[in-house]
Length: 170
Image 1 (tube, rainbow, N blue to C red):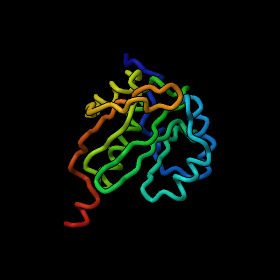
Image 2 (cartoon, helix red, strand yellow):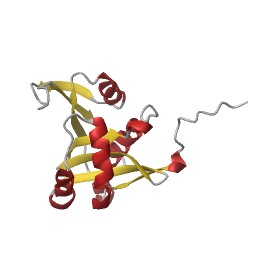
Image 3 (tube, one colour):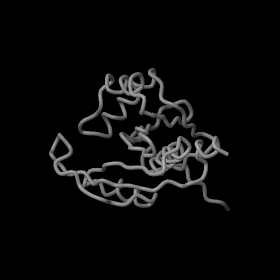
Image 4 (cartoon, rainbow, N blue to C red):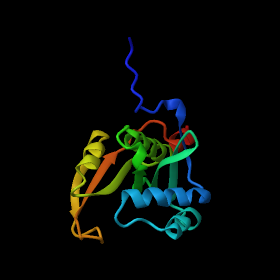
C-alpha cells in the first residue's frame, strides 16, 4: 500500500505568479512571522511601482499567499532581496521550490549568476542555498541592524539553458 504524505503540497496546488499591490498586506504578515526587521508596506509598494530592477513573485497554494520571493536583476546578476514562507507551510520544502522558481525566472530574464545574503546563524537557510548550488564567498560584518549579526554572502552560477535573451538572438 502506498504511503501518503499529507505534508507535501502537490504541484497542481502550487502557483507562482508576479506579486501585485493587493498582495502586500499578506506579504507583510509573512514578513512579521519570518524576520526581526520586516519590510514595511511602503517598502514593497516602492519596489513594485518604482524599482525597474525589481522582480517579486508570490507562491499561492489554493488561493492563499503561502510565500514570496524577490530579486533585483541588474545586467546579468540577480540579487535575492527577500524570500520567506508562511509559518504554517514551513517544513514542506516550499522554500526550496520558491528559490528554484526565482532561479528559473532569473535565468529566463538573462541572469547568469545569483547572489544573496543570509544570517550567519541561519544554518537551515545556508544548507538550502548550498543544496541549490550557492557557495559562501565572503562576510558582511554587522550587516543586520537588529543585532549587528554578520551576513554570509553567497553566489551561484545559473544554468545556461532557457535564457530569453539567448532564444531572442537565435
